[in-house]
Figure 1 (cartoon, rainbow, N blue to C red):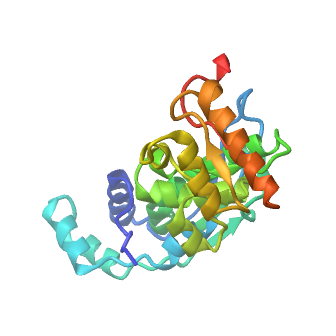
Figure 2: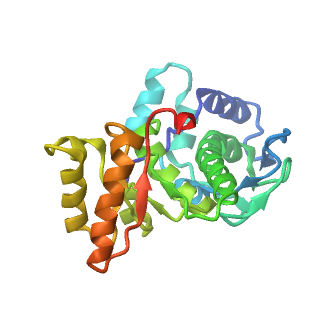
Figure 3: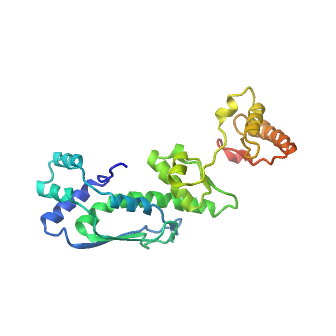
Length: 265
């Protein structure tokens, strides 16, 4: 497991140093994590709590961390000593993941000595905000269709962590499965996927590619029809292959379009 202790903004540390020097580090503080409402954001779906609690439980300043902070020449040895023995002793109150929340309603409340509460602010915000954002978007999409919604966001995510935890959040928000294999393993969620344009282009023609895929996955055949020309070749070729599948007693799943301007169709 990575040590994420320094997953914070520098000003959290400068304030902590100030609290200690002003004799306030043990003063009780209560921080609320909430979102502000606007017309297009009337509710949110809470997510990210598991990772937030995991972070809190594993805070531990390593000697490498201490050496790095010492090298910044901003803090004295007394403060570094406080960090070396840092342990979160406060209380966390939170709604369950998947709960619908409304503007200004606390998703999570931190009650702790201000020295501790201040330090965890940034990490809690990034862990809760990102997953809540994705879960909320997934909820809005899933609630506006009768069909199952699948999450295929890994290749567009802002890095591996965003892809992994975004997939988790999408499932919390209502998606039925993810394309993300490592997320499927880590969180025991259903994985799903078919084929790409590269599969179609690797064969001499589109219908051969479709037939080969149908042979391999006769009971889970979903074909990507927009490699060349959606209406002139993709859809007609898919229909031919689906008719062949049905003649053999198999029911195709459907077709997929994943590029170009859908409006012209």
